[in-house]
Image (cartoon, helix red, strand yellow):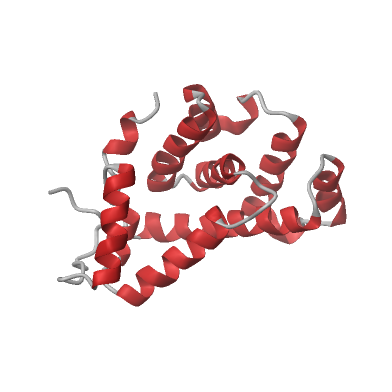
Length: 187
């Protein structure tokens, strides 16, 4: 079995019933349990905190579509060169968009992707937050409003970007490896 991370932190064994049920659902829906979940499963409280935050940021009601949130994940991860997230979220962009090249373009250089004004402004803001959040000003937020984002949407863009900046750093620091299945999905 391929190591999931460079750390020796085995999963709790046996997993609590609720965690096992969650992993079984992942296996049924995705055909795998994402390695990011397995990597956190050495401490069920940490796993639960991670999944609760992920589910809130990526799946809860928002003016941002699931695709837009995945696009932010890829743009942020591209800047941070996070192998795990680029692989996993690149696959999600390919799936949600139905466009295999979109995921690759966002991975390599989001500016070469054929994005509408809304998506371009969103990616530009995510890039600024990732590279130089301390320079964000009202004009940056207004540029998002000008293409139709609400203040709630701007909050969500900032939160998705912040979540992936944190996750990228952890994944890179522990050499978290993506599931092999992601590489071939939706191509």
